Length: 116
Image (cartoon, rainbow, N blue to C red):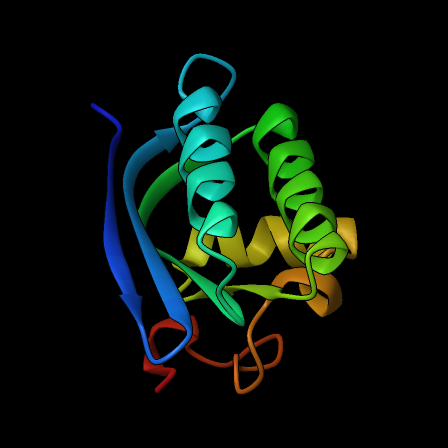
């Protein structure tokens, strides 16, 4: 599946990044570039909509953690929203759900797509 990334310009202090497809070593540079550009605008928050992500590897997880850390350095938060079942499970088993998931993301066993 092709990877696609779109960025919604800052609105009310929030930049939204939407991803679809496979986030892996061959596509993660697009996410890194988008996060860097978003943080350059000094938003209060970066929301990464991962609803269309069908696969993620360890390089992708590392990039998400690095993005989170970069956001903190500039005083912003970075949170994953609309996380699909594959990525949700991956975040849970790696222990990264507490670090990366936006507040209100369902706990294990709940439907990860029912977030607001």
